[in-house]
Every structure is written in structure tokens, then in C-alpha cells.
Length: 241
Image (tube, rainbow, N blue to C red; front, side, top):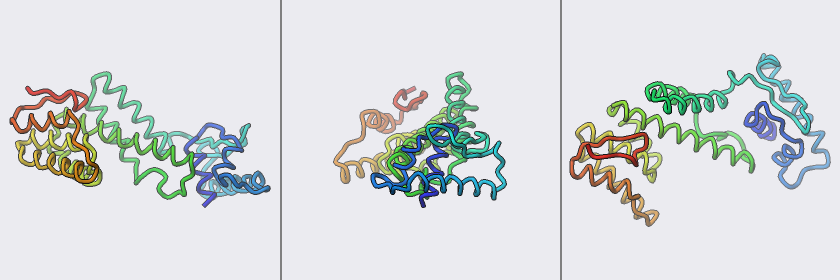
């Protein structure tokens, strides 16, 4: 397990040196053995051997000694994490340039790299927990943005089933609820949109003692009035048109 923790730290900080003391803290928390530095060197050697057995050349992935500690040198074209972050940044740039179709495509590419929650198969340590939280939040933000762009592109039918699955997994997530309501409303299914709102309201009130946010309540009113809805690059900028 410690080998996986070490490799996860090196991957998350790829192409950046991690101080030896930080790696020791991640591996042994507050109780490192007297032989911690030697043990760390053994783990580093084992990772190098694993890379060699996998046929990874130093140009693809290599753990090097880099003061004040160690660094994983990696070709970012071979690392899903780096590819995801690159697609995310390119998508933001495309959106700002007005090319929302390309931005949606880039976000779809970024999301296709995921296979589950970040670092779910690693015994998380404080630093890895923080990194997993950052990555999962970025993934969710990318998912929200891609769906919003698809709504702007008129792909209402395509996102409805996806949004039903997302609202089932995230029953208190107002943005996903709003996007599903908008997609259903635009497809001429206001009754279904109102049911989605009712389910969210019930869950929030019964389990959290909360009411939906102001903007979601406004969306609810627009659906009730059967008003046509125009959505901007944030559902909170929606307008009746």
C-alpha cells in the first residue's frame, strides 16, 4: 500500500520535486521509523523497477533524485491527469473565444479519461485527500460546463438521460437539477420538469432542512408559467424569451 501512496504522490506532482520530508510524512504520518529515508529509497527503487518491467522508457516516465527530494519525470501526453487538465484549460479558452461546440468537444474528451473518483484505489493521506477533492471538484465542474454548453447548442434530448443519472447520484445538486428541468422544458415536458423540482425540494427540506436557491425557484416559476427559456453561459443568467 505504501508503494501505491508514494506513486500517487509522485503522479499528482509530476515534473515537480517533492521534498523527502513530505513524502515521509505521507507514508508514515507522524510516526516515521528511524529507517524512513532508507525505506523511501527502497520504494523509489521498486517503482523504477516496475516502470522498467512495464517497458516504460525514461522519456515516458522516470523517477529521478531531485533536491530536495524526488521527482517523477513524465511525458504529459502519456498521463491522463495532465491530458484532463490540458483539455479543461483549452475548453475554457475555446468558450471565451465563442467556439462553444469545440469547447463541448474538449470537455467530452476530458471527461472520457475518468474511470471513477480520483485516487479511489489508494489509501488516502492528508495531501492525497486534498488532491482527490480538487480533482473531483474539477471533474464535476467540467461535467456541469459540458452539459451547459450542450444545452446552449440545443442538444436537449441527448443530455436528458445523462442528467437523470446525475441527479440520481447527486440528489442535492441544484445545477444538475436545473439543467434537467431546462432540457425537459425545452422538449415540451414541463410536467416532468416540475416533478424534478418537487423531488429536489423534498430531499432538501426533509433531509437537510433547506429550500432550493433563489435562481432555481425562479426557474421553477418560469416552467410553471410555460415561458420559453433562454440560457446563457450560466443557468443563473437564464431569461424568459
